[in-house]
Length: 197
Image 1 (tube, one colour):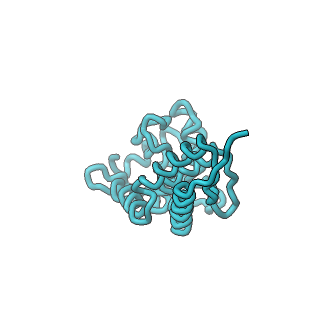
Image 2: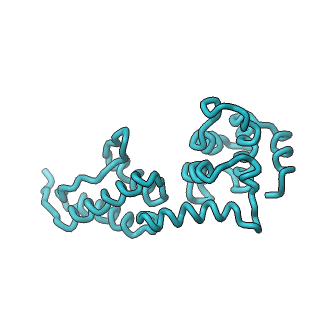
């Protein structure tokens, strides 16, 4: 049987990480740091509560190998900029302001996409461009078209931003993605006439 010890430095890191996650949850910010640590905790087999995300045990008890692995995860999370309230808020601001940049104005407002919807959508897309099914321009065209085409529907009749992101990511080609979102090439051209991407 493995030798379990109590590591005080591990306990303090666990406590700091849990506090940081609680702050982000209170703010309702699903930042890249939060997503990454939640994924790592899921791999470690930590259960999630319906109201809160996964947490580290704050006992500091671990075998040496568990200690090394957890310490690495904790140190990475606590070193991420979007782990802090200020860093997470800046990340949200950068996402929105980047979309409104005059050089690449995505015409989100004209399509009926709000700041919260845009942030929710991009929070559900892979952070790395190489992990996305399509390039950003194609994804934005699909999102704009879906929102614009369905603006008259009630909220419960529409897909959520998370569902839209998931459907786009599941598809292997543009035609399938259009079909999954209930849009057509003609719809995309109509919405693009609102302004260039």
